[in-house]
Length: 165
Ligand SMILES: *[C@@H]1O[C@H](CO)[C@@H](O)[C@H](O)[C@H]1NC(C)=O
Image (cartoon, rainbow, N blue to C red; front, side, top):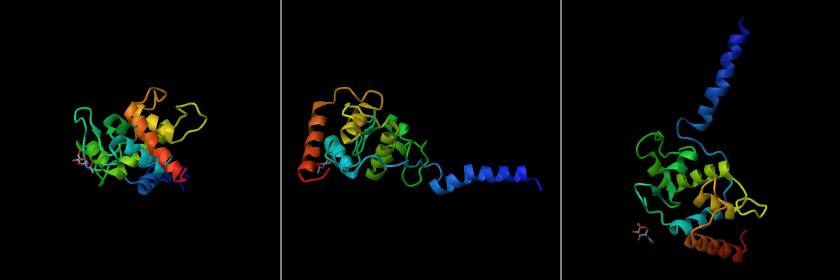
């Protein structure tokens, strides 16, 4: 019996069939979810007042949806799509960014990748995610837009007063 050949087929299947069966084909997948629901709420409060009306603020740059996600951000986060759309189709980005669930998963993937202590307080938490979301994974120590920062802080403080972490 040709064991090496059989082993190869088995090996190929573990590497190719299994992941595509478990994870689905071509839609990207969510790695894990470092960002809490509460944090997502404060991000969208600060960005759009969580107004889920499908919208792209600047169609040319393409800052779309409840979290004002850009095309580059979506690409870095693994090009998640909705309704089994192929990620290379024309509207794949806009459709995902304008879908609150797909947009939230995009944030999860982005933070999974760029998770870091931007404000140097020894923790990686929502304050860092707010910075990474706005300033990107490579310059999150920078200055935040005043309006965004104050809306965000207000939302976090509100939750803390209500006894949430
Ligand atoms: C949500 O955004 C849309 C589009 O900008 C706007 O027309 C609508 O009034 C907003 N809804 C609320 C509740 O602010």
